[in-house]
Length: 170
Image (cartoon, rainbow, N blue to C red; front, top):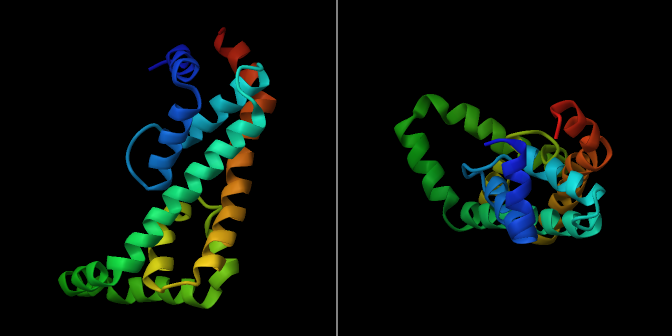
């Protein structure tokens, strides 16, 4: 799929497409990588085809909802799943317990920092749920991390997108 196909797709389906793809990415599900989608959304905002503020609102809402779904999975079933996994893979027990202890010890600040790193930023929601992290702290630390992450990607598209299109001859 080339860049013009992505552009056509977004112009046709707009914010709903952006929301869906970012939601799936924040739920760690396969699909279009948000690292491509968010900068493209920024380019479209720079061209005046979508409002920058609306793109940010849509991507942050999708990221927070996706994160909350994973938090809920961790909170309401993660302990059983984790226990079964550790029973089947006892050699992984120490590593998993170490990761859970890190999330437990670092709390609000640790979750915020984790939301700024690829791969970790989505999956950290499950241990936060398993540990039954305070919901308000979880939402605030997640939202802050999501805003910074998404702003970096959407902003990069907004600021640098035209140069990239020029290099690609589009």
